Image 1 (cartoon, one colour):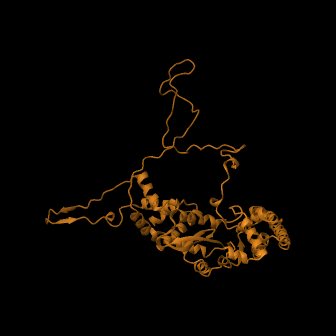
Image 2 (tube, one colour):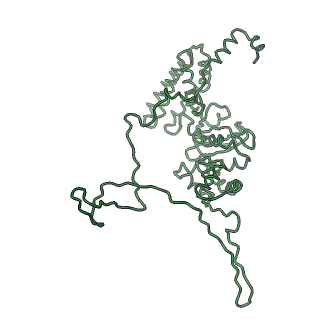
Image 3 (tube, one colour):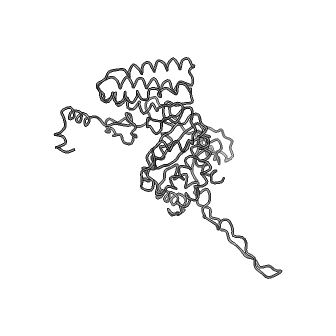
Length: 426
């Protein structure tokens, strides 16, 4: 906007423009921005590090099955100076563990194909070509470790090369690493299909998406979470059609998401994420010109308290507290305000009013927030910052299938590396 544009504005428009410029920046506490974007406090105002007063100390527990035990006996009496025999009986007065890792080196097994001359006919016969001569020389555990470091620890290709070289003395090119990922991609297709089948029978599904870069274009990484399955998928679209294609006609009882229109209307009932609205309420409470934001902040605190305790409360108590919350919310929504921030937030809450306390009818089964989806998306967000996206669509689809397999296995208590190793052995 140049000087001529400013001169054409009316007085009220100029006032609104100046007030908008003076509006403070949003933080992770008052919006959906990540904590990494917050401005750090100056050193003199920052909180001191270390344990806080009253903090109970913790120590590592001793290993239940140590690999070796080494006894330390005194050599002589500290009182009279007499020497102790090397096999003198003693009483354990202290135990301490020393933990270390052995040097890990690749195990190289060379396969030699031999031919033998027959003593009867004089002709030679060669052994069959061993399986090790076909395909890659790298074993399953190397493949599994590369996949684990790439997908779960979010290593780039360059860092992955360095880790294998520094830790194991194994030199791998980026092309070899890419071939590993491409070679193992079909192994996780079955796990993704199983997770997808479980998702399409779930009564409660949470959904969210985040931006991604695929082949130099803007794309989106979607996640769908249910109690027994997690499904990741990538698409060049942010439209509701992605959800419809994933669910394939299945309509769960409750759908949990934020207020983005493409993520709504896919379940019989809708639970809007209260955390998003709560952050907006805190922003209005801090920078608004009336008490609307503070009243909403107190209301959300009560709603979260109900969500935390709902599994231990009687059904009549839950209904009573739900009625009280709705009554107080309606009173806030009918309040008069001249604060632009409060007006905007009240409009958003009015549109989501009937979707805010759906969790009250499903004690312990429906969350009041969509944090489960945001946690599932966090590794993808970090990887986007580390690698700046995918060079090929097959790589994005392969990693989505891997994440679906690993995250679904984690719900059953399986560790990520073991889930990857099991998929490669199947």
